[in-house]
Length: 189
Image (cartoon, rainbow, N blue to C red; front, side, top):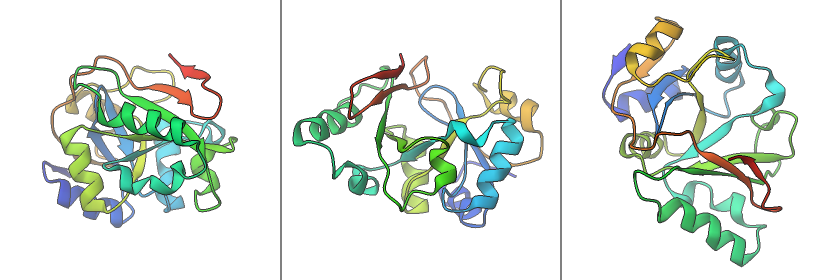
């Protein structure tokens, strides 16, 4: 199914479906992060090992506030500022944050932290709001291939094996950078 409705797409996620959707720079694959079967389907589609972990995408800081609680006030403000003060053409930032027990092990992979990004992409914001929480976000491609940059690219990779939320990519030309919020280490420049 292809839809342009964030509400319809959120319903598909709530039903345990996998969804391809445009993000700030590339198309992503998403699902309900608490639905292990849907998550395993993403791994199968991507041919991705579970150990790598995935990004959680939120539409508002309130959806990930609990993951920021253990950071210093200074670092917490830096993380929030990177999400809220970004120009649409700038590269988004994903932060590795301390993951509590409420984040499923399959999301973290072999890591003790969880990768989190609060997006300003209007369609992703609407999707997360309609879903009422954060969703899985990993690039829409088979491991080793370039991420999809259009609905056509995504359907060439995955055909009718999943559902699609059609819309425009954001204005960034590169996937998000990834930084460890506790150490400052740049994981993906």
